[in-house]
Amino acid sequence: MTHRPEIVFAPLDAEPESTCVVLAGDDLALGSRAAELDQKSSGALKKAAGAASFKGKKKSTAELLAPPRIGVDRLVMLGTGKAGDLKENDWVLLGGTAAGLISARKAKSASIIAEGPDHTGFKADQLAALIAFGAGLRIYEFDKYQTKKKKNGDEDGNERDGLEKLVIHAPDPDKARKAFEHYQALINGVFVARDLVNEPANMLGPVEFAERVRELEEVGVEVEILDDKKLKELKMGALLAVAQGSERPGRVAIMHWYGAKSKRTKPLVFIGKGVVFDTGGISIKPSGGMEDMKGDMGGAACVVGLMHALAERKANVNAIGIIGIVENMPSGTAMRPGDIITAHSGQTIEVLNTDAEGRLVLADLLSYAQEQFNPRLMINLATLTGAIMVALGKEYAGLFANDDKLAAELIDASIETGEKVWRMPLDKGYDKMIESRNADIKNIGGRWGGSCTAAAFLKFFVKDTPWAHLDVAGTAMDAPKSDINPSWGSGWGVRLLDRLVSEKYEKG
Image (tube, rainbow, N blue to C red; front, top):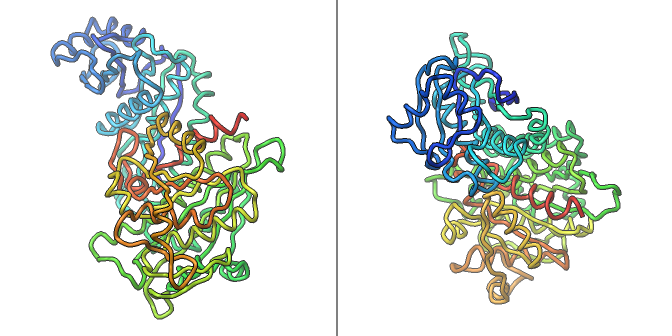
């Protein structure tokens, strides 16, 4: 499905692969192994740096072709800047930068000398693991439907063009490998999310999505799938109203991970919008760019990736993932503007715009989660509104929360991981904007404050549980490429929520 080169760890003094990246700090400060390679090549590294005016500035590079006596075809020096000033995510990003340099050179095997050029503030094994983490996130490729790239080679049967093995050289490879285990689980979770978002809608309908969720059983997640018959029994009228326009029936997938000492420990609940394709329904979208609506299940994809990561790394927490999987299509059976539907909670909703459908799906899931699981907290993720991109662009996800502590924890995790969130307001004024004359609530609030009224709609279905809503419309799909993300589907949120769990809830 995705091409995943092997990542292995080796001692610093092991012979490097044919393409090798070494780190250099300000004023060309080299780590011990890089300095040794320079000495062995009669100063070739420093000579090349001088010729290229390379001084180790952050993300700057200098390249040597076939340097003498060190057995590599290419050696690339990558600047770190003042290495002692770099924080955890800076090293992750540098690992991604290094992997990008390697990928651009089409090497089949490559080395990264994961050694800081001076005092970094990190233990050597942790530093190597962070660099490997960033590299692992970068070396992702979704080529499932490119027929010229056969599984083991090209159309003529030649070997595959691209990286097959990445060697991370570390002072203590065993310790580095152990430190990397958590990050490997995270990489796998992010890749699960990216794969799902990148899939075309004709291949990933609600039923197929639900079957993909079942694959999490392989890492120890208990999976329950609610079909349309069960959803009708549960009176999930809002979710079913969205699904009714499509020939493909809706599904709800529930993922259970019990990693805490007791199953009675209140779970953390993560909820995702899984609209596999969104035409807008009867309130149909313009055709330009509609193909991107295959990614309208980015919130659900994140939840699946997160649950995969938590289970693979045996997280010491109880967690529930719930995703509502539907397709929003126009047809003779589709819901209409002006329809009044009854949600799982028993409350009524006046549908004024069928393109405001994700909140209908989430409304039922929020009610169901509180009723069934008595959660310690709930966090939902959804590619919910274009308005959040008007407000924040594609750099930040919008954060709405009814609990200041939970909001602060998410902001802390955001800063640490670089998956950025910005807190947006919940206010009684927005509540008033979604009051309906004909039902308990209406699904849109007018032209202004679209992301805020959408959040207010969701809050209507939340009781006393600490809750946060992440509007990931700008970050889950077609987000800006970065040093660690070359993909259209970003897998955004897996790292953020894993950090929240590990730092704030797993050890408590």
